[in-house]
Every structure is written in structure tokens, then in C-alpha cells.
Length: 255
Image 1: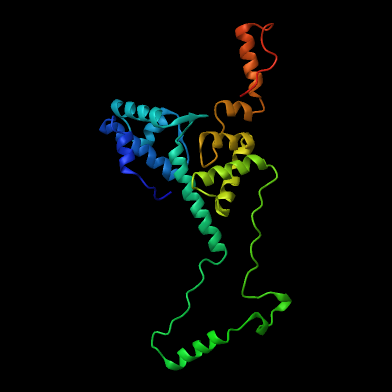
Image 2: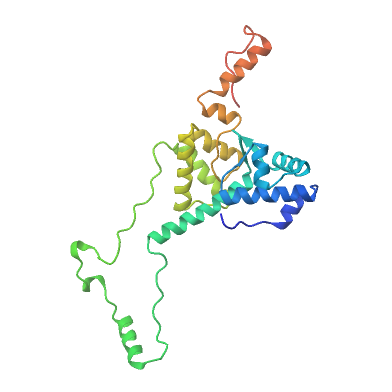
């Protein structure tokens, strides 16, 4: 991203208790996050190189804000607000790309700036007697000057239909409805997460539960469930450890 919006009031409220050095460190980390459109590394040395922190005071500031404003998942630091803005930016870019592929906006009709009466009369006659498709011969029923409309995007079979519909409904309730560009981008992100071992259904359910408008790597209980290890088994084992194998319930229901 070359640009991102920064709400000064929200930033001031969130950083009111930070020192000048800590606020500067947070700004540097945010700028890098937006510029690369990738989560930050969880390694302190790497974060300090990104922020340009060399003194002990600066390194302490980087360490503090990284723990306060970011969430660590699999060696990376995420922030939901930044991810939402990156997602919105990419959705808009994808929308513009699709519109460009369709020819962009239609050109405006040429005007008659000189007020030539003959030209004005010709345009008036053209409007009164428009040329219809019956007056133009088209080979094989197609107009050579126009491209065939692109086929609508189809959701892949590996995307769980019911869960996907719930996610789309949630986006509408958040006043962030999904157009074709957003759907393409979301499926692409979901496929990338799937290739890294994240169960698509669990990824979508995680976003629905946490109110996220995008998809992220599984974390916590969702990570265990997405790795084909049912939560019920984990909780049964924990119950057995507490109560003893003989008194442990045979099944723990996840409410």
C-alpha cells in the first residue's frame, strides 16, 4: 500500500499513555506493516531493525508496543484493524482491475462546442432515428467491436457453502457487502491459507466468531480444530487428567 488513512483521534486515544519514543516506534511498525501488506516478524531484533531502534531505550519501546498492539500467531504479529484496511484496499484494487478488463467507463459523447447548425441537425436526426441492431450485419450474430461478457465467478467446490453464506451475510451486516472483486480476493486468500494447512471451514468460522471482514491463519482452539484434531478429544484428555481416567466423561460436548 502506498497510502492508508489514519484517524488522528483514535491514534491519540490508543497511545495517550505512551512516551514519545514508544509512539514513534508504533508509527514505524505500522508504516512497515502497511507498506509490505504482511504481518510483522515476532522476533525483537527484526522489529528493531524495522523501526530503526538501536539504543536500549528504543528497543524497550519497540518491545512494549509490539506486545500491546499486535497479536502473535505462528511467529508473526497481526493487527485486525490494519488487516481490515489492507483488505479494503486490495478489494478496491481488484474491483478496478476487473472494471479495466471490461473496458473501463464508457466514453462521454462528443459535444458540439462551435454550435455548428448543420452538425446539430445531424445529431438531432441521429437521435430521432437511432441505428438499431437490425441495421447492422453481424457475423455469427456477434459484434466484432465488442468482447463477449466475462463468465461470472463461481465459488469452488471446496468452499463450505453454508459457512460461506453466513460470512457473506455477516459482511452485509457490517455494511461491507462483497462484490465480485471482494469475493475473488477472499477465495484467493482462503485458498492460500488452505495450502498452508488451514481448514477452510474453520477459517471462515473463526472470522465470523471474531467479527473479522477477512480471513487469517487459524489460532487458538480453531487452530487445533483446523488441524483435524477435534476439540472434544482435547477436552476429554484434560478431564481425564483432572478427574482420573475412570471418572472422566466419555464425551465432552462443545457448547
